[in-house]
Length: 363
Image (cartoon, rainbow, N blue to C red; front, side, top):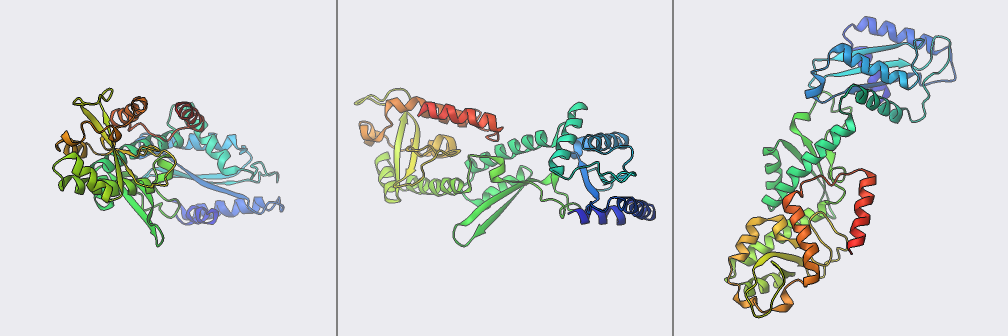
């Protein structure tokens, strides 16, 4: 990585001969401290295009120099900055001699990547600019919102990819022989930058976007939606629908509006579908332990289609409905998913611990 940046510094600088000369000068100075072999600190700072293009070159350079100051670069250290405006994302490259002119190593190597990243964020905050972490959180929230919308509207991965593309995202799937589709990476089309693709991989893995939504859960949602559609098409009442789903290996529970009253007509709110004998023990983004998937949360069209079936066959079937003591929490779950469920599940560690404690209290 360090060599790649040095090569870019040497050969792609605007004034190639000048850059080569400065590099040789730095190398000569670095030899004053033979104990330090990796004398060159190299890297780059980039901002999203909508922010970076508004920054003047002088402002970009000031961010870089102030951040470098914070990690030990002094006025006795040699460095060179190169701002690249011609690429898709404006960014600034730097190469710094860790050895100053007196032969002292002023930039310690321990956790240098983390320390420099923290320094850049500190400078950005001082200037009222979003940091890379804040930008990342915003992007992940937008990705999660679009992804969950696509999951609800589609019932297979091919259509999900097309739906995400319409929303401005490229969705990349990975697979293996054992599990089939086993992973997902999402990137914004506007962020794709082929000029720097060799330096970093764009986008985020699904596990980075949400700590709850797993690829296995998405596969289960698509499998269940397909089974429900088929069961509904081949039934004219809820009892037959019920039996059709059971034959496919799924159980059904009805959630009514308010308390269930035997012998009366109860208005159906939702259907919860679970795979019989499912070994899934943890809650997911859509999945709820011991209950399954809410049709209301994953596909409104499915709910309407099943509700349209003749309901007389199950009106007094007490074994088919959710127990009243669980209704409140389930309504809260479904309501959250439908109302503002698109709030990102990507949260800070402190927030994550807080939600874990709340979930434990509700059990």
